[in-house]
Length: 523
Ligand SMILES: [Zn+2]
Image: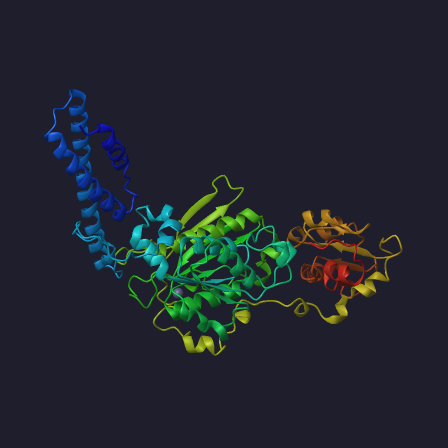
């Protein structure tokens, strides 16, 4: 008599089949199980069975019926998957197992390498991804401009997800002050290329994608690089590069995920999705459609100047990767999401807010039919993005006679470091002033003094006599706000038409640290 126990392990094993199991393995297991089962069944028919054995036999037969039913369902799902892909652009027909189970070769080559099934398994089994989504990721190529606080997390997730080709563009080098937020770099890479550093880190996460490293800055003349990619991520922190990258995306007809972060806030938009070239009726807006004019240059600060909380820029970079993956995996027959702006505020009562934004501007200077920006004009360098955004050089603001070098200023203070016969006004914001400051200096943050309306407000805050001839020296971190302050004090009449000297300390405390006092903290 056949031992029922011989059958049980097989039956238990078969009944644990999950939806996530590879179809090939299910087919193989059912085939084997079927053969063994039929053989044992013959024995049972010729043997007088004990009652409990009979019940076990019934139980196993039920399990087999269930498995056969499940197998039929899986085959139906596979057929549906195949027809979906035929409607789209991907061919996953080869993914289907052959109907002939008797064949020893029961499947065509898999659509992915076995390593990829394992590596991407946790996302492959999601309905939002599946085989079509993974193949779209593999066929995609993403150019990430900026290997900093946004680019690091964005690139890491795209590499992990299996994007086929990833380009990293950045001309900067890794600095110690980057490491609190640019999490793919490390202390050993300080002083070396950010693009190379990020590329190396990505290869450790996933060696399968192709990585193209562009260790230089993006300028209009090298913007042709976008031709090799199907999507761009703007991970930079300057308005001039935002417009340049948007124009690149428009002339190359590829979607753009644009994000920014400063201090405790960030925002993100998916632009040019779908691109103008596909169907101008349905095309998404470009950056110029939303922001035709750049912000005034004096209102713009990069996170190097304005400060940034590491996780804030991390959140925005992760969202960029998420939006990119959603756009890449979207089936061709599904419309793009309506254009929207996601705003993040770390300390807001509501951390995330989504605002619907207007669509394509029919008179946009970049993406409308009467645009003057073409690929040729872009790559010739005739578009001056720095001028368009009004980038200010520190030396542009004040004349040389209104500025004093750190050397000259050093001779005006006594050995204890206190000012002699002058007023030193430090206009850095409070947190910076509290990090390090000079004895006897007067602290008035630039954000406060720029709102002064009259001379009295200034003389009160600075504790100065309006009639005095004592010169005023203004200092900030890098020498930009200090120049604007000199102009502001003159507007208010504090200089009494030149009777009182008001000067800016050239290069600010950073120049002071480099040239005069190396014990001054670098931050
Ligand atoms: Zn536009």
